[in-house]
Amino acid sequence: MKLILSKEELLEKFNRRKGLESDLELTVKEIIAAIQEKGDEALLNYAQKFDGFRGDIANLKVSDEEIEKAYQEVDGEFLKSLRKARDRVWAFHQKQLPKSWFNTEDSGNILGQVYTPVEVAGIYVPGGTASYPSSVVMNAVPAKVAGVKRIVMVSPQKGERMNPYVLVAAREAGVTEIYRIGGAHAIAALAFGTNTIPKVDVITGPGNIYVTLAKKLVYGMVNIDMLAGPSEVVVIADKTAKPAYLAADMLSQAEHDPLAAGVVITWDLELAEKTSQKVEEYLKKLPRWEITVKALESCGGIVVVKSEEEAFSLANHLAPEHLELMLENPFSYLSKVKNAGAIFLGSFSPEPLGDYLAGPNHVLPTSGSSRFSSPLSVDNFLKKSSVIYYSRDGFLEDAIDVIKLAETEGLFAHALSVKVRLLDE
Picture: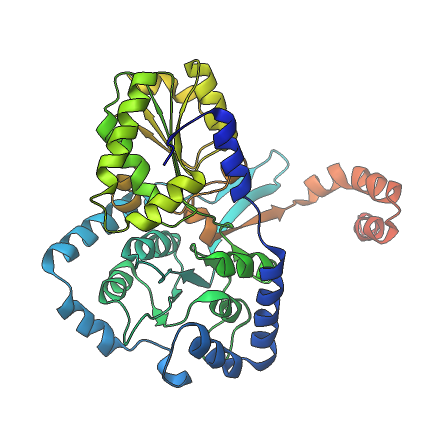
């Protein structure tokens, strides 16, 4: 396996990785249309076909008894770590809460902005090649902090029952109800509602290509967080970085799925060669090595550039989900980062800390979308409303200008709305 690449070779890999497949979109459209038309009947059919569900529609919802039983199956150390992660995520997102504000002008006009949580939030938790209690925490906690009262979780059941760690995470994070479904049909059910699944106002959480396409297609009926693609980490490293750390951090993302990206960028050839050797060494010890190798071959590698300026230029072009700066005095380079979902500074801030426990959200923009979007946050579960109050004096001061602007646009009823009030004066 060739790990040390030119910049051009890496960019070619990333270009091949981008894009949603139009033939899959047609399939997802059919699923969404069926859920809209037939509701629970279609939902049950798809759950049986794609999720391997074996019950009837009434069994889609996870019972309180099943959740209580899950607590008996998880170990105490997991619960301790989960609660620590939940509390840190809660504390971080608490600081994101915006405040409603009002401004009173000299005329007596009052202008302002108020924030209101959505009524119902839907969160999607993957259940494919692995189960992710951490994703439950990262999606549910910001919703709770925002003040959402009803949090509906969907996650496909693999095997005879739901993963107990996921169920416990849901209870600890404040999820109010859980349904054992996944895929595009779960997204459609959340977006449009069925007799069993409530219609939600916003859907968050990553999933496979079918989930991503479904979120894209239902946007407008509901809000969504983002269109998530395969996970990625880019590490910029200088001679002070340890090859073992770089190799491990590349692999930590590559093990997610065959299209995940693990990339190191450096201007030190010796460091690149030693890191490559460490990758080969660690690969032999990983249980998910087949997935990891495919990921490295499809979208991973170590790129040797000429300078740190070229390294940051390449990283900003890639606009990665995770960017690690394994550099001497990493804070001095922070201003050079233009595009990244999350930035990790120094040798002791590996990306997995952000995945699980640091506090910032791990649902991040991928596939270059950090150029224009941001991590999942409390804002995803809040709405802003403008507030406008005009006093009599304030109205008289602005009325003629509003009439002029409205009539210039040919909207004479708009002007009339102001004129009738002037005639009363």
